[in-house]
Amino acid sequence: MSKEELGRLTLITGSLDGKYTVSFMAKKLGISERQVKRLKRAVRENGDGAVIHGNSGRHPANYKSEELRGRIIGLKRSSNYDDANFTYFRELLLERENIKIGYTTLSAILKDAGIVSKKTHRKGGRLFKRRKRRSAFGELLQADATPYDWWGTGARQALHGYIDDATGRLVGLYMCQNECLQGYLEALRQVLSNYGIPIDVYTDKAGLFFVNNKKPEHWTLDEQLAGKSLDKTRFGAIADELGINLIMAHSPQAKGRIERVWGTLQDRLPTYFKLNGITTMELFNVLAPQVMDWFNQHFAVEPESAETSFVPLSGENNLDTLLAVKHERTTDAADQRSDGCFSFQNITFEIDADKAIAKKKIVFMFSERIGFRALYDKKYYPVKPLDFLNDSQGLPAVTKLLLTNFYLADGKAIPQPFVGRG
Picture 1 (cartoon, helix red, strand yellow):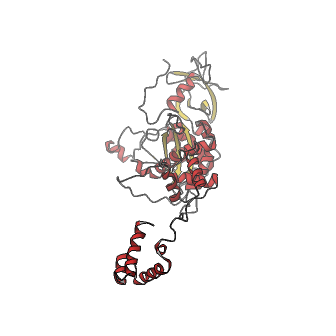
Picture 2 (cartoon, one colour):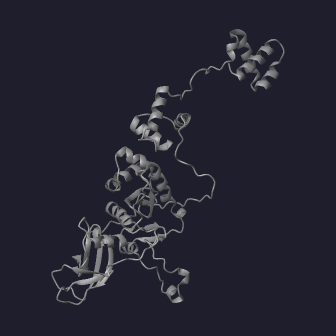
Picture 3 (spheres, rainbow, N blue to C red):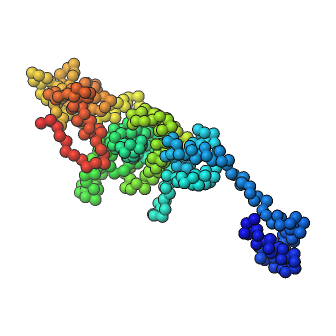
């Protein structure tokens, strides 16, 4: 019998002996006079046990057996689930272990066992009002990248992504060693291949997207009247070619939706990787569509409008050449050695063409997918570097050099001077 029940019994016994009135008892116990009379009658007929609550000694309705509690605790401490927060662990229990349990009950079981959820909740600080979603799928994409130790090895890789503003759907994901042009272009390849061309893309102010060499307030009057725009990066040039409008965000909060996506993925992907055998960045990039489907099934919402704003990609667009680094050059005059040579970053290149291309304007392009190419008169020609030592263990040294400096360079690192071949 608890102290509360013992005190109640003392009062009721005193009332039976005539020490306390019914009204006094009702006020003292915080119950109605009718309930007091019922308790007095129960004690008179059944003895002291009448004041003991009917559930005393019983487990609550939501109590889980010791065996099930032990199983849940064991699973949470296993290598498969130890990184999962309580919410994700509850989902995994239902999906993979056929255990249905409420969050409050699960939390109590785990906390009683000394297990604390890894997910922390924001306390205090400045609150930002969420911007209303765009109405149609494909009307606005938010682009960003997040570096994270996805496999718990201490090494961080950057996950690049695009999320649709209207639905919260992930439409492109690609992982690289650091935030770079390749990551954004390969994720964009997924968007263009699977959905088409979006109207707007919301990005941060990184140099991958905008050349911020002159602030608008420093433009001359003539430049303002002429509607001067910022110089174009390679990403900006591709956006122009596709008709995508780039919007610059001036703070992380402006792209709040994709910032929250990164928090969710950092919280859940390490566990997802372990459960699905994804152990490397290269394997992730192969299985990125599967990861996006998994995310969208859990978090995507229906758009306000049933119409899509994605514009179908023209059959004339070759994504391999579209998503390559491009530079305009003029070939040298013909000589005895070749009539299709040009220089780029102090490296001499030769065009392998079936006709003379001397003193002609060409577009030099390169990427991991296409290698080196030259576009002249609407035709693509192979290009090879001259007088540059090759690496016997894989890609030619010049290929690695140019890809590293123009395609794989860290978009958030301090730019280093390019070191070409003198």
